[in-house]
Amino acid sequence: MAVYKIFPTKDTTLYSNYPLINTGLDAICETSNTIGIDGSPKVARFITQFNTEEIQDIINSKISGDPYKIYFKNFIATAQGINADTSIEILTLAQQWNNGTGKYLDSPQTKDGASWTFPSISGSSSWSISGSNNGYFYTSSFSSPNAGGGNWYTGSNFRVTESFGLRDIKDIELDVSYIVNSWYSSSIPNYGFIVKLTGSQEFSTNENIQPIFKYYSVDTNTIYPPTLEFRWRDYSTILTGSATSSIINTSDLKMSLSENPEVFYPESTNRFYINISPLYPPRIYQTSSLYTNLKYLPTSSYYAIKDLDTNEFVINFDNQYTQISSDVNGNYFDVYMSGLEPERYYSILIKTNINGSTKIFDDNYYFKVIN
Image (cartoon, rainbow, N blue to C red; front, side, top):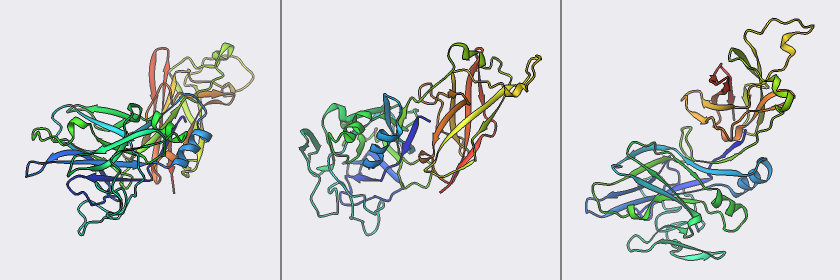
């Protein structure tokens, strides 16, 4: 498959109203702007980081097509106080930090990791308010008493944004290809992302607009941890010229998957083959079995993968990145199991367009990823 996912190595939320606490083991990461009982605004931002060696390995060894895209995805747990269009920005973090072992409102407070004031243990050096790395300038929050809150590069290429309306799905899915490729090329060091409300919506004193976005963290016990998703087009076909005569031309067909042992380890990569034949074959005279005639799906065929318990797509149909390939053995697609949560069952769906009719096949094509 041309979709490969990795998970963060660490993440934590920074709270302006609790400038020393660490929340590195919380199951939730938050970005928000709320008003305290004293009328002062309280801001939350979160930071997250992915492993540089994993990124390098994927780009060097896994990706077989060019160009490729890289997306940061984070899944919403709860959202409230959003009664107007609200924008979130993902910025490129400019300083090393420590995950810590705290949770929100630990008593006593845990201070062994990144907080609003400090990138590391409380009492060490504060977040650097401004400076540069390799010629790229960064900034932070300046105004007292809210100085700090992480720091980020100022260049527009190191910033991506997403806006949400009242009834929009609040999941984050943003193209961060430029940022990740900058880490890959060592143009800047990889310290991760900082996710926050856009500048005009932070430290707002408007009591009518108090947006709170809570996203699942890497420490969630759900199937929704944040991911860095690499997508590339690995489509290949032999169905050209006279070979197109092998394409099935009826939507009345039966289908099965081969090369499916049904249980995989996360390190596995599996090539699934699709076997198809017409449900009502025409009567013809021939000296060999009809079922030895290899048939293919039309080239406009795609696969998707669902989590069997939640019935949600973990990889959705995509005309670019999940198109089904073909070789002399039939139709096929590759799946990297490392991007799927272990100890869960998954279902494969096949979508194809035959004679102007779109059909989706979901015929108990199951597998499980185990630890």
